Amino acid sequence: MADRITLDLPPGVLQRARLLAIRAGRPIGDYLAETLRDALEPFGDLDEASPEAWTDQEALDAADSRMPEAEDWRLSELLQR
Image 1: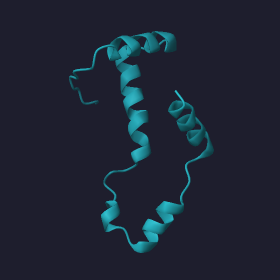
Image 2: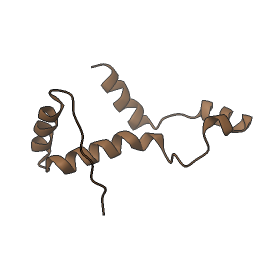
Image 3: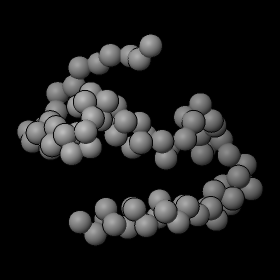
């Protein structure tokens, strides 16, 4: 079962979310839950060790890692707005 919370949103956020949910043909709650899940997904499993606990090699591997091309394209698109 999903957890339930109450949010206080800045002005205009709920209206924009409602419009986007309507365009997607989805209920607003489902749309917001999916959007939040997708926004948090890039952070990965937060149960993993924090970067401060990484070995030197883990830090170097993370520094050399690259975002998947599709995600990189989407982030670039969003940053241009």
